[in-house]
Image 1 (cartoon, one colour):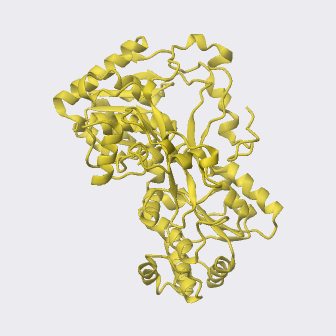
Image 2: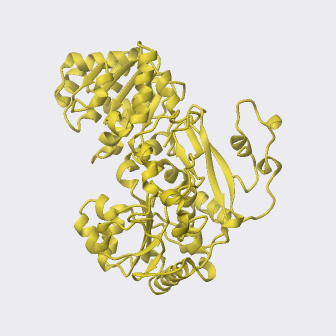
Image 3: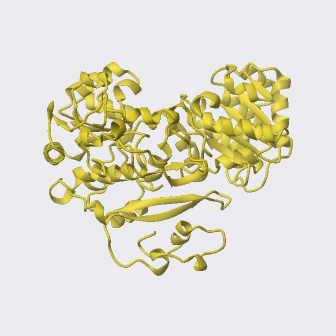
Length: 527
């Protein structure tokens, strides 16, 4: 395996998983054909049987008896199709993902601050900053490609300051100029104190709309109180505050140490608040940067692959519901949020959810209380699993498995911060040194569209052959373009306006991409 030197996200660098990716295309332990009730069957029979059983449960118990459990391992297109089938055509919002376990706090923090789940930073900002703060992140182990970029940036610019905030002295601390070994769980107090220090130093900027409320909550968190709360020397706390206030550009990188907490969302907002108050966001080298925990967790968030989102940064509010129903051409659109990950499996255990489709993940291993999850799935009347392997711990509930065959060559899109919606690197031929003839796979994979086209009556989605992409751009509060956001429609209605049909380079304003230019239209296609 070799990284792509021209890719803007990794610049050719690979982590251990990327370097070993070729080893995953072998045939050992792989499902070579779909199975239904333990019997190998052809794809048409497997898809038809799955669709028939789903429809039977919907007819008898209603759409709320069905749930999808997806994964940050899915491709953006697959995420979109699954979300559209569940919310738009089955008619319930019971689609959640294992990304809930790692990223829901970050999602809530961004939506509170910016009104949408957007990350106002890119990887390039790390190399352009004067101060990089890592909190709740051992990037040397968990984000090694980014860590390598940061280490190189430090070598190229010795004036770059790095602060590591972590109860432990991890490998990441080796490149840090300052390590704050605060008490576990005290991060919120540290950043509340920083906000208070900004106010006391007169370093707050105008335009922070919720600034008065945030500053009122932070008032009283002086250095002495923060030091006692965090278990840090007062001079270390004061030194960190002085560095942040003095730095022309500062970026904060945070991940699971912040997110996976009973107060994770509040900690995310404490970090975001100091950037909003200081004006260190929406410009090069600045911002609150949440690092995702899976390869395409952000792609799922983009298209609405969580039970609490609708689709494409839209929410369960009347205007968004009407817009999406028109865009999808459906009268069955879910009207309220669905079951989140832990709630979903609890509902399976109570017998309220009778069909669950698990895609690209193993909840028996990853969810809390794995014994309860195993018991719930064992009692579920219909459990489908879409994957290319059969992990031993799935056997506790003997699913109805559909093989994805683990294609070794497939072009797809995933959202990467700083390189939004780029195709993946392509791998060479599939399983076992080109022995792909041994694997019974469909050219495009057995995605939600394959099931959807076999659902009878009003639930059926149109053929994926008619799918088109419609871009939507998002900006930060400062007006900075974040990235092109893609929506996919399987229902073609009306005539798109001239700009939506395709804006030429000459017609676009300077610095605007074709995707963003197309989104500047006024017809029903792109609103």
